[in-house]
Image 1 (tube, rainbow, N blue to C red):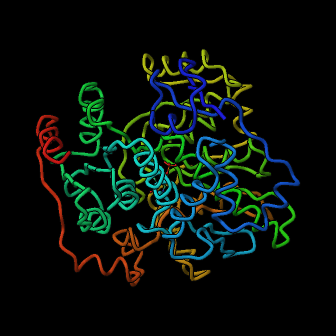
Image 2 (image 1 turned 120 degrees about the horizontal axis):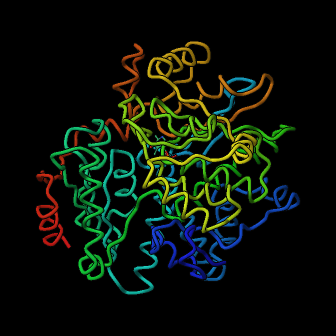
Length: 462
Ligand SMILES: *Cc1c(COP(=O)(O)O)cnc(C)c1O
């Protein structure tokens, strides 16, 4: 299996190089040269597999023989061995028409662990094989940083530095990042916003000498390994439900911001997994809703919501979907992305919009609706949703047809966003690993938001 760029400037590179490249060198995103197909007979057999066994099968289709199967199995087993639930991502039916796919049983209680535990194992493996130290640099608004740090803490051959905006992440998120005391982890609390952090990261990656001499690597959601890891739970959920006797293909409702998680679902469908509708749940940052409904993709004004991990205007994985919408035409994709730069928006014609609506439905959940969804679900079923998952449930209630089963992806544990849960008037007790964080000391360096200040911290650390 080889990978290519959505912009046409990169082709024929293997899985490991694709993982290391992150963003394609031509500015595009990496995708498989052809999407592997899984037939009905294989799907039937896969019903019997545990989560790690299933992940091994799915990854094998993309990794080919670049990593020996026994090594890949070890990477997968180590990645998912850290999860607190035996099923890794259990599917819970909370109503006849609604199942919740719990993706938050990893070390940091959010779904990003599923991809970043695997990416961490992969980076450590690559470092062992190549004998070089990998330096990871990233910015976070909360969940990604905690998850990336957990993915690589204490691992030989890896150093990680994560920037977060000082005072602008939730308390639990800050504790998860800063209470880690492994020597290969550096937390920088930047005076500024998440956008400032991202700008600094961009500038440091643009410093080619610096990037080369330190083998600087990214962890953001455009990495192909992250997408592939996320396709696995779509297979797992649909196959578990089929095994339990569910006759029809379920809808999936996906709280999304970067289009990453929902693109993984789209890819699972293109591989051959029967899926009803992909329901794209956004919050008040609803550019993706406008895209599905009107065919216009236009990033606008940033809004703060109760689901901060979806407070995103520019969906970094969106280009991958455009590429497939235009039948893998790299030239068309490049020109659409150029239009986005010059005009600030992309408009697709009616036939393309119809194709989008065939696969997706979308709804932007208002702040008040999000809290109401948490309250109503808790009252009628006793199940406590986090604000991101609540957007998924609210969207599925708007959009799924009567009698259809929808699986909503539960992307975070409610304890991570207690500030919002308290607004609904619901009290919760923290799971033990989260409660324990409050007793630990923090390791964090405060820095002003200049690229130079951060570069000198990095030079000291690396
Ligand atoms: C990151 C995140 C999302 C959005 O994921 P995308 O990759 O943008 O689709 C949703 N919920 C939570 C809790 C997250 O951390």
